[in-house]
Length: 407
Image (tube, rainbow, N blue to C red; front, top):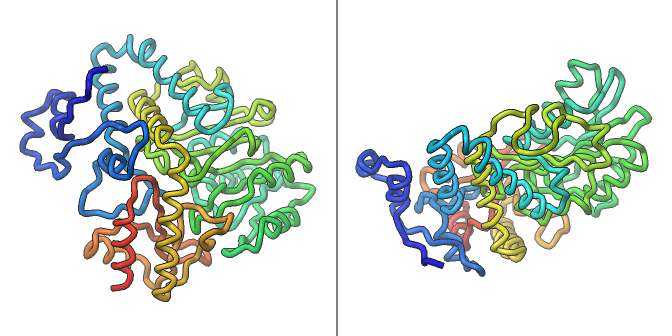
């Protein structure tokens, strides 16, 4: 194999897009070498693949994850290839590559490719699921008080348009065990319940819900089980076959570090009669007569992100969780309340929330004075700064957060 040539990101863009003169004076601060992914990546090689602003500690992967350089390269090359011969590429060669991405994505999340479609986001996937559930006036949807708008707006729409009723279970911030959560949800199921829809990992506090056990509960009641996995895929080990939910929605542009505008929709084969979205009428392939043309360069970029994540192995979860736990423990010693499961808890994910007064003011100061990027969360009883780490982060990012919060 010919060894890769290291070029700056600006030079790569100029070479690929043919606009070297335009970019030459752009003053890009990411003008540095980007190494290819290693077979067994070290932290340094992972960081070298990113084009994040070097003066930022980016701790907001739960909103948008930073794309590795290999993902950007794949997208740019695909865009150029598409424009060389649009009709041929879009309906033949590149389309075949995009469908191959769907196959690799299915292997990554543990499902049959025939059950998986690529969408533009978790929200689109949830909308497709909800619109395909034949809810009528008086039917109940059981959910929680910690759902993101992208996973709850679809049910609220059906409540307005069809007269369905939404029942919300209040989740504890610090549950004792899985049984407590199971009991809360089981007690809220009524004879009118038709759907249970919950997050795999809550966007507010990073609480991991026992979705496989909840699926068994739902099935015993002949109720559809829908999972919003926006904060799960790429952040924790997701095996859709084991979860066995009727439908699962996820994001490609958060923890998977894929291109913005990519998502995942899984509908298990046995549930297709009960959940049959119109765009999948001709099957789940990237292009069909029912779905129309797609953003093929973004889908191919998602494939590169999947390959990059696969090359790191599952040990990336343990390393990042250790950083998360160290940050939580240090901040707790500084007197901050952590509105998330404690280190070592089976409910803990890579996302946690720090309780602070005036969270927007604090977040603005963290960015302006310390280069720390976090997200403000104000949802019901949760108010604070959400920190979400991924394989893109380092111990230096954790140290910068701790130092900034101490000051």
